[in-house]
Amino acid sequence: MTRSGLGWYIIRRLAVALPLLFLITFGVFALVKLAPGDPVRALIGSRPANAETIAAIREEFHLNDPFLIQYGKWLGQVIKGDLGRSITGNRPVARMIGDRLGLTLYLTLLGTFLVLTLGVALGMLAAFRRESRLDRGVVMLGVLGISSPPFVTGIFLLYIFAVVLGWFPTFGPGRGFLDRFWHLVLPAFALALSVMAIVTKITRASVVEELDKDYVVFARARGLSAARIAFSYVLRNALIPVVTAGGLIVVGLIAGAIYVEVTFALPGLGSLTVEAVQKRDIPLVQGTTLVFAVLVVLINLAIDVLYTLIDPRIRFGRVES
Image (cartoon, rainbow, N blue to C red; front, side, top):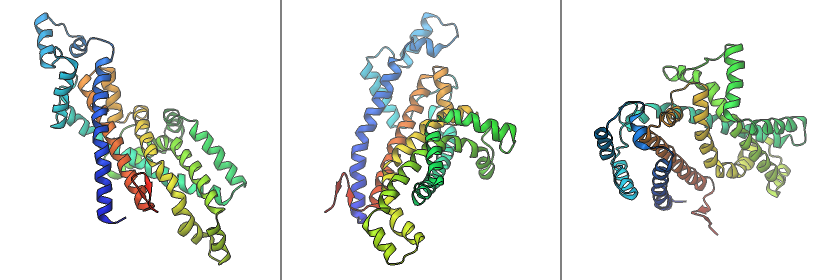
């Protein structure tokens, strides 16, 4: 694909993503409004309030307006970059999210790195040793990984490697790049394990399919080494299904980050969302949910672009002849 073709492809994908983001903002706002309970009582909390205070709160947060008017005013603020002010923290929501977002992105990127490196390597290893004990062992580990939720895996890893063996810190995000990396190794493994099992399974099936094709047989007949066949021929074709599932992989990691951050007491965006829900901080819930949704849309866009770079025949849902 040429640079201009790739540019038009990205523009068309953005044109599809913008209406989707609009629908997501509407869904987020509607779900929060439909949540049970009086929003005024949630805003006031346990503090006493008279009729004048309640009327002032309803006026400040536009609660007397019809639903669509409230949504329009909220969306107008969001477009300007104003996500409102936290009720419990009394700080701008955008600033609170900015303070927590870096840790969540660090954790998600580290988990993605583990998934793609170890998952692809184990899948290729199992495929090249098909029907061996190693292959069966990898398949069994994959089944175990898929059936283990991140918070269960996190508690297990935390107890064995942090409490019993003392190899890793039990909680906290760490300071500085390397110290943070050390603190996030266990959470990243807990986050990545179930998704890694899926990648291993997809890679194994894809490599096994490629190994049975004619071009691999011809390559072997030409006397090419197994390493060259694997990395120069098989891996590129076998990675296409993995990249196709890349959007789901990263979305799974972002969703799992909420549970892992709570398990390891990490002050990230996931734990902030849980705190906001527990305290019924409506502007903060709307803001964090919206940021998660935007991240998912942008990551899927990046995966689609990467997909076209790996296989240039594919453009916007069609294959060039």
